[in-house]
Image 1 (cartoon, rainbow, N blue to C red):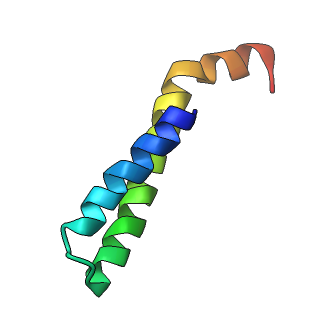
Image 2 (image 1 turned 60 degrees about the vertical axis):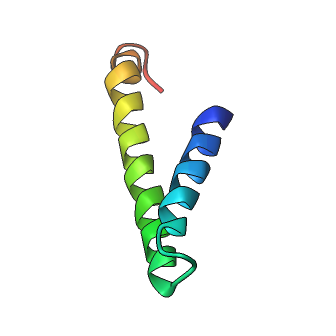
Length: 57
């Protein structure tokens, strides 16, 4: 889990840095974090949701 969080932080910092510290960089960073988080959740559901359905939470 830590690796995923570190990956997300570094990837989104790179996205923010494309805007050279401008105001759009903050928006790009937030959008990047949201997008990667949604993808992460989707991947986790695809990989493990059957366990929740089978064994409960």
